Length: 326
Image (cartoon, rainbow, N blue to C red; front, side, top):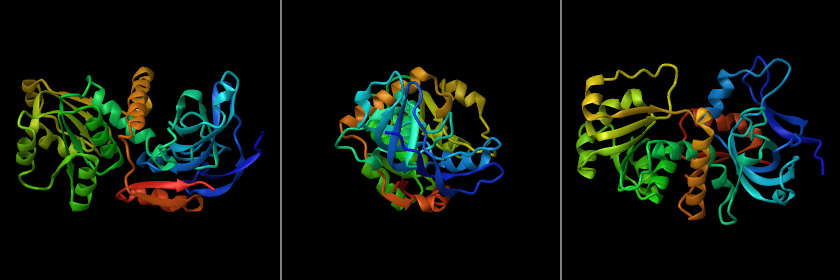
């Protein structure tokens, strides 16, 4: 059944302001599915993209990459059996502007991932960007089983997913750095030993928890944390940086990395090779099926409150910001 229109949050050429309005609902093309969204997840990349990337002239964009809901229509080449399937959405709107801050979105068939019956839509909407980023960082240089892992920013969405995925994948130790008691409580609940990176003896605390050093670093602020990372790294360790802004500049002490045979790796989820992205999806699905993934405390907004939802993420809300779709 065709759905001629829907409510969506949009922004238009020359403006970063979001407006909720009625727009034509998308129809799935060949190899695509349409999802009736229940929840949209908000990530830092969403407000950053909105403020950096104006829409092409004479069109509009719908923000947000992550979401969860139910497939209600399929395009040519997709099994009609998928209609009615609960799914979480990966990189919604990445190529065509139909993001998840709307009642419906269309995505390629392989970007609508089955969501187990016991998993909530809120959890599904929390996976995409955070969990897949975390999974890639953990496994970009081989399995994490038996390794010591340090997660910088363990109370953030990526950090939370990295802790739970590392635990599920049998990491030997999972340590998270945090900035205060509230964040420490969240990281510990996910399964990490915590260290306040502001403590003058933070390196000593990490070395006490991981006497042989850290093998894998999931790094949110390389330009701020590189010195601490180097102080606790094991030989052959790998530091994977997944976040930065235009002012992020790290001074790299080349000789120290050479002596330890360390690897600095950088990633952006949008440019991860398809085979590696598919592998990250597979690992995330396995953890989800095992009940190993949970949500952070939720900050709920309505679609009409999308500006406030984006602002909350930009201002560093502790927990997961989600939008309930009408």
